[in-house]
Image (cartoon, rainbow, N blue to C red; front, side):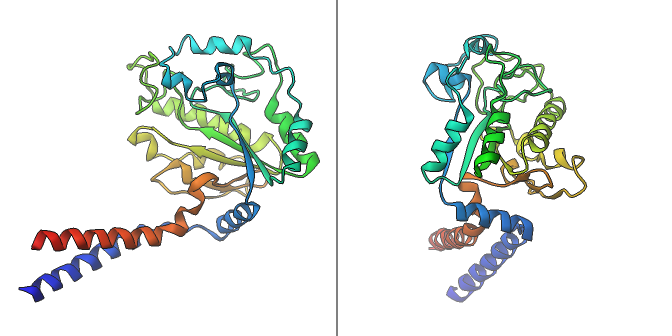
Length: 285
């Protein structure tokens, strides 16, 4: 009986391990190089900045306070960061020892911090400030020799065509106007703008937190395939956060904890296999 149990456990462990191994993501050499370069920078500054800053309750205030999607955009009319000076910001950040800057180009509230042609809901067209802060930061980073990263949210709690996910459900958006293909076209247009118009050293990262299953299964890597002939994209279908593209004018690379997933996956598999063995052993007793 014990021999049969041991054989069964061995077969199951082998099968599970083999199935897991087949699904392992293997990044290209270009991606590995980008990951190494990013890891070697060690220290960077992540700026969360948008019209939500006016309320002083964080970038999730629209979700946390269930602010109506028709009322929230009115904040833009009062957004005027008069003291903003890109050179002063970049110089201060570089003096701190940081090797790169990451800024929210667009967070879950859907407001764009650059002059986007895809939507008038942006800092140039919808606010009295009327300045493209991402362009100014991009140029300042080029002048002072520091890398610039753009964070871009796949979520949008304000657009009616964005599919209803796990978050932003209290903003009052109608449920009968969701259109993923339409939203994806808009999103890809914005991503192409960021990847082609904001400096040679610009880098890019995105998030898919709280998205629907459908949106998690679709990557936005194809959005930049037509921007340059030297595009080399590696896509992993399980999550848009792992989309990485290397371009002649810009480079998409992971930032935050997603960077180390490929390296930690073997350890995670080992722990998972160990947990399965323990559960199987208990079940047979």
